[in-house]
Length: 166
Image 1: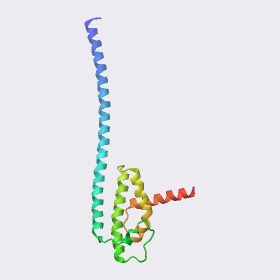
Image 2: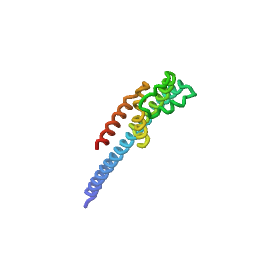
Image 3: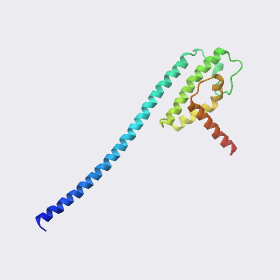
């Protein structure tokens, strides 16, 4: 083999190894881009979650600030009731509405965090159970509920009906 032939073989080998290196680099860069995209999406979810949490906190604080600190004992017993007691005064109903508004906002926030995948399944299930237990009372009090809460209530009722039919 002559020197010229030897250099041609080395040149061909160099081109082959160079193309393998380019291919490996492209695969590495594709993996890095995908990982960066996933991290960016996760950070975006967390940022949205923080904004939603801040809004929920301010709405909860607003509702609770309108409550009388001497919260009547009989209003504590409203939790989980299907309707309002007739003995409830309009002032007590107002206090109860503000308290329930704060709770509804906190539960809506938990549902939103669940949609983003940022809370445990158990906490999400507890929020949905609370919705089912108190939805009719919230309606009776005139509590504002987000579409997310109404949808969760309707979904749980459909599941409950299907399970009782089985």
